[in-house]
Length: 328
Image (cartoon, rainbow, N blue to C red; front, top):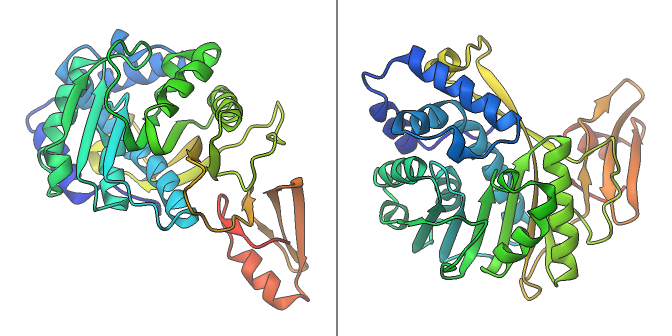
């Protein structure tokens, strides 16, 4: 099972929802979900504190899990990266900042930027419940990242989590370039694992490589992306559902699968480990072989590891979609 929310964040959300009608939360969550699927901006559907709370209950666990997976990949590639400052762009309820301080506990300052007052108020309220000093004292910034008239201070780690959907593909590149200019160390962009989400990620990736960014993850290379439509690059993180989460989403399964796309780019002077290759499908294991698709510097490759090559076969059968693998 994938990452779950930190206990302090879970408790803060539960406390925030004491006495709140679950039926009302479910109605608000359904309306928000439908609006986002139609590529709508949050300002049109998250207008009140109750809307933000419904989002936190229904969507925050999944977005947190996706960002956490991206941060794990960054830490694996760049173990010496230790950001002191974090800028959370389009912060929503602040889940990405919680994931950042979990991954890098030496963070000393966090800024939460959002143009939505309801989201920003909830993010600040939840952050105050953290036992991490920087997160508890995080600085809310009311601003629209799509038109930063007074850009915030640059940060070692800049996160844009499920934010580029608000600008669409046509403006994703210039927005990503603006955010890259705020990143002293690493910029992470996470989007829904849909063709449209991947299209935004791919456009940002190409532009920022051209601007000098070094790809940390998920790609094992900085060449042109080998994935073409109708295929798209995305990953999956399974996460547990709480009872309230199931109630609000009208779901019976005790887990949820969050599909997401992302890219992490670093300044060229950041020291990194070799990447190997990225597993792009759940390995299929038979009596004869273990087979999976991998993204490599040479493009997409279908790996077929015969059972008779015992050591390689054992390694291959233990791989998961999204893992780094040794060169085949």
